[in-house]
View 1 (cartoon, rainbow, N blue to C red):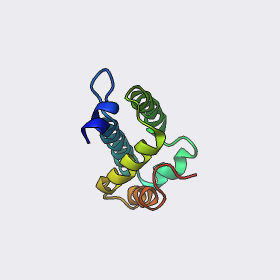
View 2 (view 1 turned 45 degrees about the horizontal axis):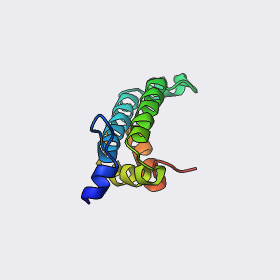
View 3 (view 1 turned 60 degrees about the vertical axis):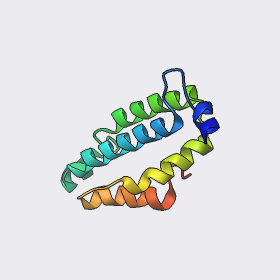
View 4 (view 1 turned 135 degrees about the vertical axis):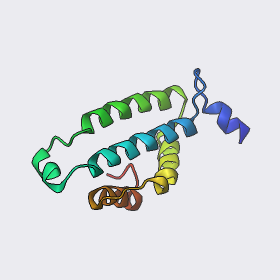
Length: 109
């Protein structure tokens, strides 16, 4: 286990696990933002879901951190899918997003 931690540590001290924790928080923040919207707001947004561009930018930053930490795509997929159970929402639409993530995983094609 210590070898995995050392192998996955970046120069700033972030581990693959840290990146996965940060990524799940970004996903939860996005779900929270979408969950706060009414169905009319969601329908009116069309392809421009509020918060999605920021979500994409944060995702790119986290991908860079994962690369710097030496995390493989397979390792990150496993870590993120393990953490998907911690996602929660009080809205039906937010719960649909979470259910999709849980059933298909975060890296479904």
